[in-house]
Length: 326
Ligand SMILES: C[S@@+](CC[C@H](N)C(=O)[O-])C[C@H]1O[C@@H](n2cnc3c(N)ncnc32)[C@H](O)[C@@H]1O
Image (cartoon, rainbow, N blue to C red):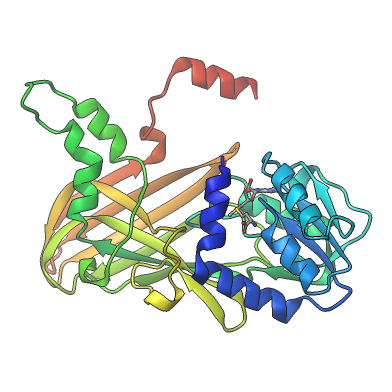
């Protein structure tokens, strides 16, 4: 759930905003009908008005929409923006939009119900020749030496001076993804492209990615980092991929995602690491599963890990009952 401060970070991030404003300037023609799914505090809806949109439908389930209403009134755009305090999937509009803005993914596109929402908005709310922003994502993953991030996750649960075995909690945290910045010197092999999402065509909310790396330099692998190259509009990109150059990398939002391994692995140049990474939407959340195999150049196994976010949260009977009722 976004707080108003989170929307502030999205707006203050000059890389993200620069890319979206360029995309809006290129896409929104005077008189256009625009749909802003996930308007938050309304920034894109307001910019669309400033660019001459005739009507903007701004949709947001978060109470921050009341702040957006206030900001629209303060800027003289209240009469051109129709606010809907709801999820886009529950909204019916009197006309179809020419431009659909839907920056509703998280650090990766597979986030909450972002993909089904975009598919639904594309089918019901957008004109057949309408444009979706952002247009597409390419997903990159890399094996990383991330000692600091790994230690932050696990050190509270390792053997301790109190002689108390906390390993049950350690098993949980290594089965959950984390977020954190990665620098190029942490990569043990060049990032590999492992999936693409074209928002004009995507239908399937789930994904399976298979990727293999030949380790380029010796180091300790702690897991896999993943991020996207996002084409907001042709020629305008932002990226949180593990090797993203600074000029396209948002600094305040969209940290890369880190899938930790259950234990660090000493890797040599020439070792081969393969990964099967799956995201399956269950209700409103994704279950991520990641299977890793590391072997020496001669085929000898160094490690086999089978992990899932299903094993990354305490599973209470009460939660199962609640979910079963939904
Ligand atoms: C990354 S924020 C973007 C906020 C705003 N566009 C901005 O740039 O400041 C994503 C927003 O999308 C909203 N959201 C997610 N799914 C939605 C849906 N199906 N319909 C409407 N809003 C949605 C979330 O509540 C969140 O406020």
